[in-house]
Length: 435
Image 1 (cartoon, rainbow, N blue to C red):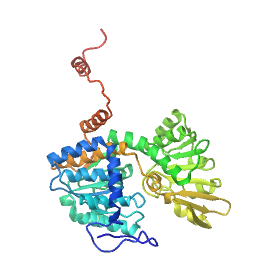
Image 2: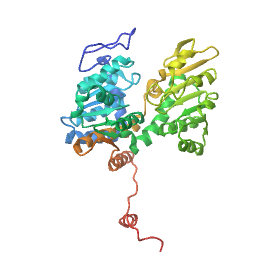
Image 3: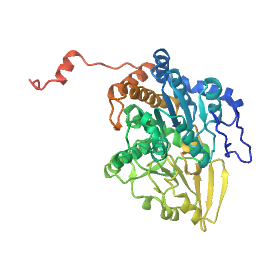
């Protein structure tokens, strides 16, 4: 059933319980083109999908996935179905859903999708409930909302849960907190910690797509501007490097002394946010934490300062306090809101949500190829290792990480060296040194 949304109220979803809830099924043809285009840049996932179709390792497994509903994610969903999975997909972010992709997954692939671009919080929470109604054996999560809701509100479902795979730094932090609290009673694969995920997705994907989102939303010139990047993890590294490459003067703010020192050694200015607030033209948060930019920072900012987030949840920027400081707010461009203060204005992009997905298309497909290859193999790993993994947080085994890297290199036509028998012996011995 097509759930077309009115122009006057595009985010109010219907209340009926359906096996899908998308904006307009007539958009499917456009979605198919987007999915196919992304698939051209995802050779590793394509090879996994082909193997899955032959071996059917996911047969009989119910999967509930909470992800950004984009063309790249669609290729993951298709691979999971090829492996035999009964999958339900919901949106992890209201501004990242590509409605045409959601329609194509329903029409072309018979996958249950609950996702509407711009859906409100109540709709999102209802979709989380629907994902749990699926009674999943495995959860693919992006921020651990589905997992946390199961633990808090639907504990009876835990008995059938083989485990979860988590895509984000924020979600892994929540899983660690759950482990400390003694409520993580199942294995969780920290997909984000795989080298072929965070080294590439976080650094190269976030770096490029964040600036893509900023430029699409504002059409500003980055050269010569002071860009403040909050956080120097892998996402912060990529964002700072790309901003510098565009000619910006980049300032890093950090709470970790080692990361701050690394940023300094990499040639960036490092200071506190209190200091940087007075200098920045563009602020980008990539920390995964709460209120990284707060009331006092807004008060220090110059007129016309632009603020956006490329971390995870929209709480990195304290928009409640900004609203309290403001005398009014107006939309000046798509995804661009101007908050009017007594003596200045401050610009917020993408409602404080992920700017690379709100105003742009997220990470390039070639990067998500590795990330979603990790997700697909993590799901298979939870199945093959069921009964062997105790509750806890696990990295995907190194041999699978390396397998993904080898497949990616081969798809790019790159060959690398291998150790000789003599070298292997040397690396595993202790008695051979200088002669």
